[in-house]
Amino acid sequence: MTPDIKPLVAGNWKMNGVQSCLAELNAMSTGFTKELQSKIDLLICLPATLISLGTAETKQSALKIGAQDCHFNVNGAHTGDISTQMITDIGATSVLVGHSERRTDHGESDAIVLAKANAAIASGLMTVVCIGETEVERKSGDTLKVLETQLAGSLPDEYSSNIVIAYEPVWAIGTGLIPKVSDVEEAHGFIRSEMIKRYGENGKTIRLLYGGSVKPANAKELMSIENVDGALVGGASLKAADFLGICEAYL
Ligand code: 13P
Image (cartoon, rainbow, N blue to C red):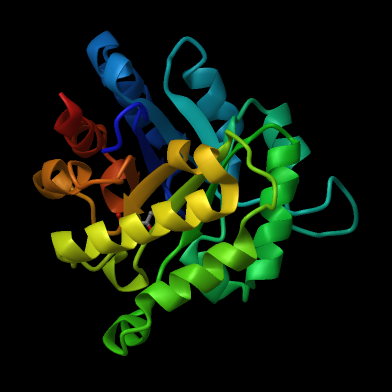
């Protein structure tokens, strides 16, 4: 945690979920009590097909809806892509950019992630820029170097209060493996110092999320690490009981 930063717990449904799964979203929104609302912000990044239905479902709720990716152009001949304008048009308030699955599956470079981040920020979306090292990079002792390069290449020059960073070690995603507390502390401390180098005092206010196998059982330990200002949750964000179980780490 960082004093004066309200944590953000964000779910990423990835390519999971059909209309019937909105019942889970509804349960999350109901379970996001006033008490929890006073402690954390809550976001679910839905597959594009569910965003519109999800925003309608959570209209009266403090739970926010986000997208998982965007194109960097406002419109045009980009078959299959969605723009930030389309995302805001259907009521989403946030977007993930540079998730490792996008970087790997779609060959997204830091330059592409940067273009997407700029487009998202220009549209007023809270923009979660994802970074993280692979297993090979960690084993060869290159973690901080990789994070430094990704941050340098994927982040907008100008500070915006809509920038959020998610540190997701690739080897911890969906594997049940999590880094040692001291490794998370080191990575987040490093990211914080890079943010301050880049954005000055404003860098102290940027939320730094941890992602990778966050579950109700490990959330309290992970979320209490210095400079960890919330979580980006994959598998455990699909079920309300698990996701709310993670949020309860903040009670
Ligand atoms: P898991 O929580 O399933 O490991 O996924 C993490 C993630 O990639 C969230 O974006």
